[in-house]
Amino acid sequence: MSLSVVILAAGKGTRMKSQKPKVLHTISGKPMLFHIIDEASKLSDDITVVLSHQFDHVKGEIEKSYKNIKIHKQDTQNFPGTGGALKGLKLSSKRALILNGDMPLITQESLEQLANSTAPIAMTILNLEDPNGYGRVIIKDGSVEEIVEQKDCTQEQLAIQSVNAGVYALDTELLNRFIPQIDNNNAQKEYYLTDIIKMAKESNLTIEPIVVNAKDYMGVNSKVDLANAEAIMQERIKNRLMLEGVIMRNPQSIYIDCRASFIGETVLENGVTIEGPCEIENSHIKAYSVIEESKISNSSIGPMAHIRPKSTIRDSHIGNFVEVKKSTLNDVKAGHLSYLGDSTIESGTNIGAGVITCNYDGKAKYQTKIGKNVFIGSDSQLVAPVTIEDNTMIAAGTTVTENVPSGALAISRVKQKIVNSFFHKFFKK
Image (tube, rainbow, N blue to C red; front, side, top):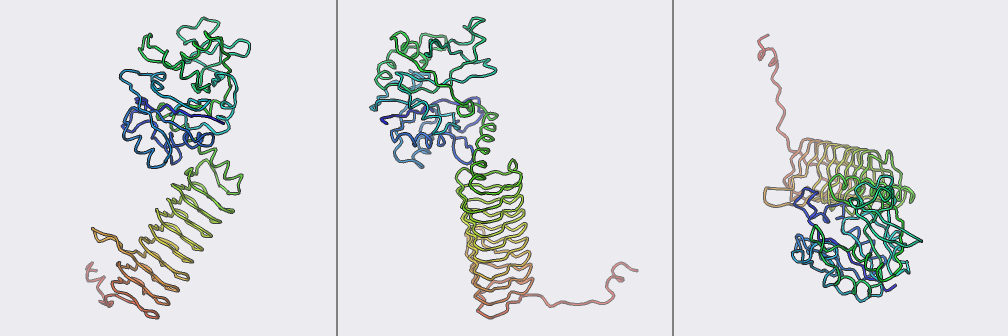
């Protein structure tokens, strides 16, 4: 299909009440604009994003993640509005698909329905139970006649439930012909893309109405809308994963980043959070645990464990209130109340309660290397950089500041002292 996609993302988004550009607000771990680019990319490799507000910032974020996206800067001072967004933009493909940068829930399937239309112009239609606040779309004999703003509707027209969803597919030749003709002779002094519908009717062209799902074409204009879109996206992600074999306890309480991937029959208990591009395989993530940008395979995590970014955990048990950061654990047991940061820990090793890798001196981070079959007693501190070799033991309450050779026991304690009858002397009883 010879198709150019244009995404309108130039607006200020003032209703978001935020310094961040609206289209960069995230939904399930990814900016809403990127959700749209990803779905559009399944239809075409010719994608143009129209920007204006915080142009350099948004452009920079796009270029960090995509290589072949074209950027068009709208002259909002001289040509404001959706029609002004396309002023000066020339497209070479036979058909053009015009999308909005604040509709992150669109899908490839819903876009294909529109893109596959052979009418000169096709436009998306929502049939709403309560169309209040929307312009009404007048349809006659299967073709759009006009779009009437609510304030201009007759009583009969107010009863119409068909409204404009704001997404169009049309012959590029028509777009290139009509856009220069759009003017700003209206109360807002803006250039409206909807004017092409009027021009098409005056040219006796057919305008096909494509009825679409309201959820797919939901616009995000406020943080309330953002939360509602997040809920819909989360439902989609979790339903897909459960159909692929992931078990979820109370799915509504679970959060899963759209970039996370799962292999095999993983179990996610209630309250689990999966953030970033995690990879989880055949593992059990217990209640209220948080996994961030890490790889987990054949392991049990939690409850209430925190696996921070750049960790890899294989064939291990990580218990409650254990925090792991930027570490690799292979066949390790860390049952409870430990911090393991910037560490490499090999198979057969047991980490006791309250063990801490002291990896930060206030200026830099240092590595802790723990070998195979190491037993580390409770409440031990491992002051990095330090290496603990295979088949060693660390006595409970030890502070390790030097490397421990294979086969050794490391113990660092003050000798215990007993003072008889001290209790009664102290309290004078």
